[in-house]
Length: 166
Image 1: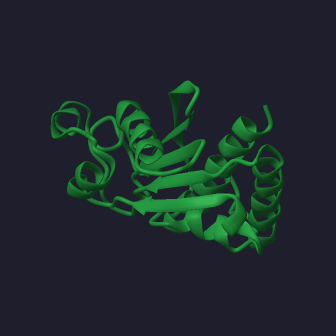
Image 2: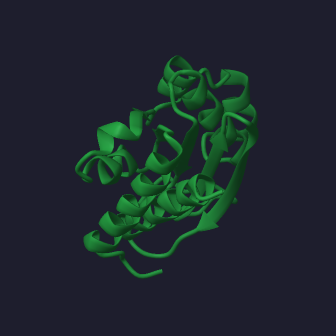
Image 3: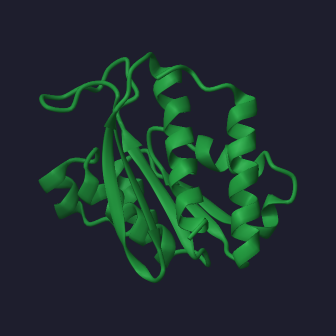
């Protein structure tokens, strides 16, 4: 996937904001490999305080446990880069916020960090709403660290927009 232009991300975040505001909803983010870039894209939009509650940057496993309540046993069983962890991060973000919808991103942006079965570019995303169980998907993204992170922001925002457009 090509590197996404900042203006494209801004436009997507603005669409998300309009959809969330239309419902009177708030969103939250739980991020690992993106390090707050999803929250940054959202809060780059003027007026986002009306629809963004908070973001959790949980880069370490300890932070995933302390801030989001992700069980250490889950992290041991599945690894931080997994769909079960992405779902747990979403559930934790919803539990620890006032948001109606949330997104989680956990992955390997590179250039290091690959493990057997989880190459650089493996990113797990989770989305959820208070009225439904979280869902998760895994993408294998191409490119360098910046490209993986930028593409991850777009995928995260698109998933939130899908939730907010229902």
